[in-house]
Amino acid sequence: MFAIASDDVTQVRQVLENGDAGPNDPVGPQSALAFALTNDQLTHKMEIVKTLLAYGADPTVLKQHSKTTPRSASDVKAAQLPPALMEEMDPATRYYVERADAPHTRRTSALIHRSFFRPLTRVRYELVGQDRALEQLFRVLSIHSRNLSVTPIVVLLCGPSGHGKSLLARKFGSLLDVPTHTVNMTTLKATDDLWKSYSMSPYETPTTCTLAEFLINNEGKRCVVVLDEIEKTHDEKTLWSLLMPWELGRCAFDANGRHVDVRNVIWLGTSNVGHDLVFEHHEARASPDELMTREEYMELMGLLRPRVSDRLGASILSRVTTVLPFVPFTLEERRAICAEALHTIAGDIVCTLPTNVVDSMVNGALADYSATEGARSLYRAVSNQLVDNI
Image (cartoon, rainbow, N blue to C red; front, side, top):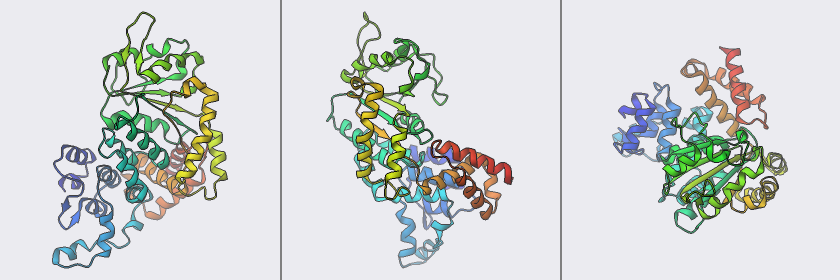
């Protein structure tokens, strides 16, 4: 309770990580989640709620408050949760609460509940949308965690810009608490540049290690290598050096060098290959503004894989564990992105604005949405709304 009441997201996260308190521990007559949602003094309410949900807070308690009959004085206080609580939430907070309570969320989380990859379920509260991509990813990781596959994990995240591919790749290592090396594939000129490349992500711990040195330093250990914009190499032969590590889990950086064990490396590639196909499939759906069914997503996966094969080559793709299409946002997801962007860009100022002004800015930003640019267009539109209204 004190961590939540302090309005300090970092402190809440530390308490949960250290096990000093659980996400479903009662705070007086309420759950921690209900306490956070009904505390109007919190300026970082959304981030605290997301943190509680990420660590397993049960959103069903919010429904129980309105359905159960009070049997004692303490129950009466607990039942005083506003009946229209969900409607009073901002669109982003409501989106994350409803997402945590969705049946498909619980089913897919169960796939890796007891595995090393369990912390990845928290990415749902860092990333808006892409539920089916996460579901398929967790299925693949479940297979590997049970030692049902002998090849390394190689995942390609494909689709239009601004839909979360790089964000998911970036969060992978930090959530699993393993080292990450990110390669900007657009800068590679020669076939051996891959192993000489330095990590380019500003979100990682600064290092002077090349990719080869990173793999040697983490030999046999779990770590993540992100190949950003993998299809944009100047020479397709650059990718040939990935054939052996992706198939055998062994890597040699030169003809006379020893083989390095990279079986536990998680290889993540991001790519815009197939973005036009993703949009075509989206427009052909019967209900494009509703969550895609698993059947529809599997159909899209089947259509996309040949496109990737044509671009990267069959020899490369045959060694890829799965190709995950990233799809356009639904209206609800776009609204959540706008609301979260307002809090991210404007900070505490948002809490001082009337609800009708906030709603007007969100709706104004939605009108400027560009599907081809995804979330980036919404963040830009929100920034413009803030300039015009503040």
